[in-house]
Amino acid sequence: MPTPAPWLDDDLLPLRPERSPAGWWGADGLHEYDAAALPAAVRDDQRGAIHYVWLPALPRLLPLAEAALGDAPLATAVGERDARLLRRTLTSQVLAAVLFAGLALAPALIGGQFGMGLWLLAIAVQSADSAVAAGLALRQLRRDTVVYLHRAAVEARYWLWAARAAQRPWRTWCLVAAWAALHLMQLAIGLKASYAAVALDKEAVRAGDWVRLATAGLVHVEPLHLVFNALAFLSLGRAAELLATARAVLPVFAVAVVAGNLASLSLVPQGSSLGASGGVCGMLGFLLMLAWRRRALLPPAIVAALWRSTALLAVFGALAWNSIDNAAHGGGLVAGAAMAVLLVPVEGALPLQTTSAWRVLDLAAVIAVTATALTTAWRLLGG
Image (cartoon, rainbow, N blue to C red; front, side):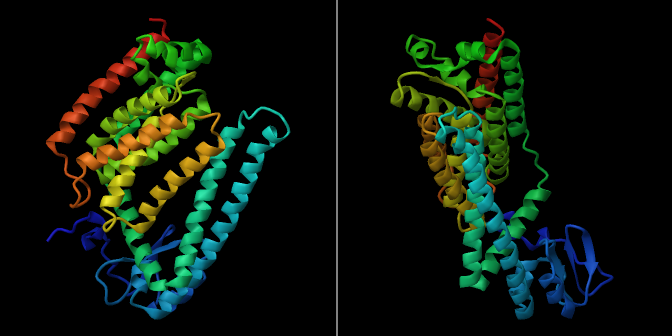
């Protein structure tokens, strides 16, 4: 009987080596060990390098946390090692968050320009997210080791499946490549000239230039803006292609960009803006709702990470309210979540089936995004 998610299938796990009764597999390959000595090896693991183990009674390798569920000495060793690693991560990420937040806010506090501070603040927020994740995991480990180990085992299976997935996120890669190509054109003609040609100029849109609702979502303010959006979308887009269907990426992005820009036009009627952030937030909203509906199948850490990302997006928007378009972010997030509500069944397996609805939406989005990219390039070239 098929499992509701491929990472829960035992056939995913590698067969144990025949030559050795026990050992472990980690970042630096296979290591043979006496089963009785394994807890000591785990306890001495300073880098978290031991990922999977095999034991005499098991036909396949198991995630370390899963093997520890049935072995009290090993569970104790895993708890001690993970507590040490989590405390180290928590400390380093808190320090990084404080450092980058200080560097970001210092120019504003002394009366200078915010400038690079926006991107330093984004790094601080990301560091804070990592610190929160480590703190929550450490708290769970201290409160209930069995629950912690179970969650860690499911997460290890998930990442093994994701790493082995044959599907490549071509749509995500192609979209980010299009952003990069268009940004090179922006740099070639001058950033200010590119804003005039394709940005979400609210006055121009109300005067009838509605195509800017789409073109503004494929260009960026500066190289760092592109880099941050690209990194976020590469992560979210790949997750969507793996967990949902590859045919969801472009429809969600296209709808979220237009919805976000319409929200910006309605809620912030003056000025202009540009960037793919509305589409990136749309992908986050889509994954958030998908994860909520399939939370029984996904590792809790994945679901929690999406919720934290949404909360940190709000925090970042509040801190940098005068530098980013919160209306576009919020509109894109809501649009992506709404698409999941409409197109993801309440119950079912993962990944999603590629239905005829997704095929039609994907074809329409391929045509729309391609046409928008060509229109954006034509305008940037002076057309």
